[in-house]
Image (cartoon, rainbow, N blue to C red; front, side, top):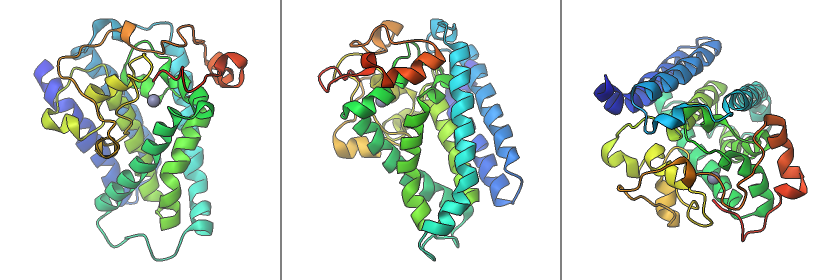
Length: 290
Ligand SMILES: [Zn+2]
């Protein structure tokens, strides 16, 4: 069973879950099915972490479980709201006739994933360099353990900024709402994989796909050390920007994660929503830690 999870978990999430979303959306099925797939993905994430944990203690709540549920519910609800207004936005802002709608649906989704990957990765990188953005992004870096579900844990304003940057070019291109719905599910699945506490293996793909082996380096707490591996779906832009980092010998503990400059970041949901707007949420580029 552990071997099955080690080598089968990522293909299950990327090919079966995302693949089912593509098939359902391409077949014109109600978008509610995609919400069902999100629950399947979250369930699979927790189950795989029990079978093959990277660290046993990262499966134990650190007083963060209810807060992370609140983050996930709010952020996924925002995503659903964004999908609801997308057709109106596209009707107003898109340039007619550009979207390659004659291509197979799966290829259209792949195009959306790659375009969104660039925008989201660049906003993520900027969030580590610009103090005003870091205030918002610091919420996500306050975690002391990495497990799938806390990939969805981020300040809703920061998620909105990242999403806007990732989706704006696609709106201009006239992305159909069915493609956008699958893209939203692919983002959630990717966040679950990227922060996963599953000790899975993907071979040489670990240098191409932005999965947990590379992303743990991004959560190192020391100034500068975590300014690597910004990609959401791929590490292609990190290779181009010179921000790719990987050491196969490196192992991670809770003490390695978080923010060295902000060791007492608030833990509660409402406190985390407010922190970016409080004096204590301020920072300079000198103490931006990851
Ligand atoms: Zn970050």
